[in-house]
Image (cartoon, rainbow, N blue to C red; front, side, top):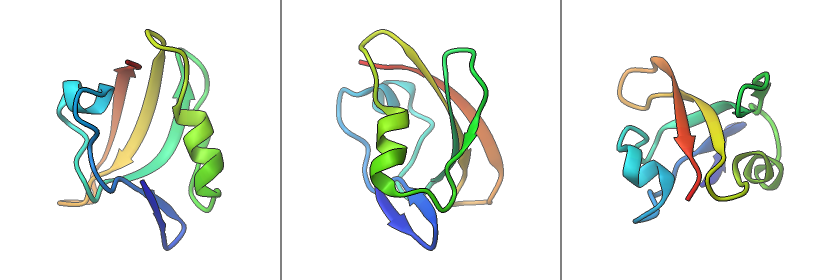
Length: 84
């Protein structure tokens, strides 16, 4: 991931990781909010990259939800990923 104009942008998909297994998250997509399991979403726009990473990472087998602004059409989608 990288920080760009206040957004956390997906730089690459880690082979074998949760996003790779899911297949929907693509390089260039912007993460705009993160939630744990069934928790409330936290807006991560303008948040330091290191803090966003702490929200996304977690114990293997737990769920993280990402609200993502797609690079190709700016549509906002929500993905639920099981951490690996």
